[in-house]
Image (tube, rainbow, N blue to C red; front, side, top):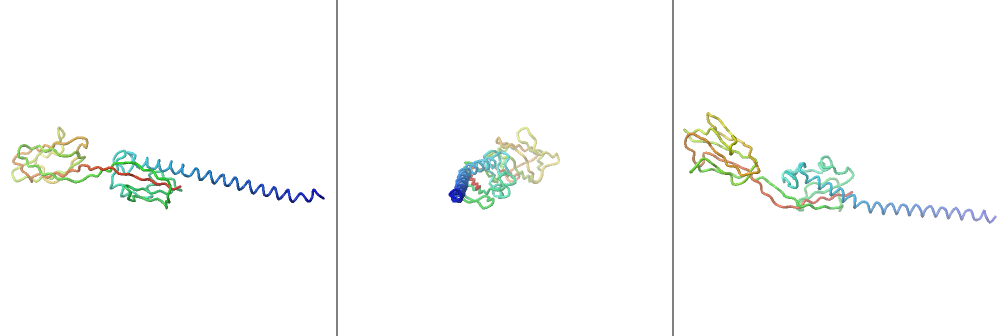
Length: 223
């Protein structure tokens, strides 16, 4: 009779023990997940920032050099499709504190900051005087230029060179606007070969040197 009386007590004790074990295991798993989350966010934020400043990224001109026009076109969808952001993570990108792109609905998350260079091409124009010779040295390095040739009557511009390289040639005469590719690694001197007189205003050159500044790229990932 006593053994039968003890059976409910034992069952209740086992039930309480099971509840305690489940609670402890659940709490441990929650603690483990909470501990892992910042590490996962840190890893993903660092990886995403690495991708954004790589030389092959769509927003860079070369490694760690940001193209501001491309940054303005960056979208949250690009972070998933092009830069490998996990589909179940949210992210926010800022440049010098200004919002660039948002994927999902990120909260505080984990943030990584990177020092980058922002490089922008600006248009400058030059009208050579040709008072001493027909050589024109561009003041700044530029990857390309636009040469507008409008010689007076009786003057024929046949060739335009950059050093030893022929950029433009027409034996019957060059007239109009021409886009030429130059080396962005060195200062370029253009030489105009012409029969007749050239003076200021007969040639206009537009070139596109770079202006750079330092900036901070901020990447936040919320897992």
